[in-house]
Length: 154
Image (cartoon, rainbow, N blue to C red; front, side):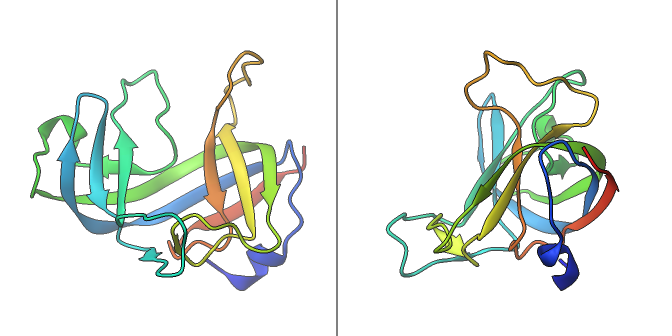
């Protein structure tokens, strides 16, 4: 991620164009709801109180559902443990619905520890007032090579 995007001032309501180049990953788990992969970007934080195993689960989704920014190719339905796959973010328009700021950086189990996380939904999806946890996060300190382009101010 570019250093200048970390310095940018984001606000709830901003619309962003987000993407991440595809990277090869190995499937380590498959369930009816998600596919877990060895995460190709973050490193395990040896000083963390959280024992992250280096895996990330990516939800299986139907065409009308949104499972988050990161996706898997080929389609998750065809993958088995041990298979190789690709993980990335196709160009996606999102809207910021919340912002988490952490000082000191949050202990999440991986490095680098995040200072700022944007909580986002697809730009055309209304926020559900009854949803306890909604959206996906963009870690501005992420080791993943995310591209974030501001499109409009909320």
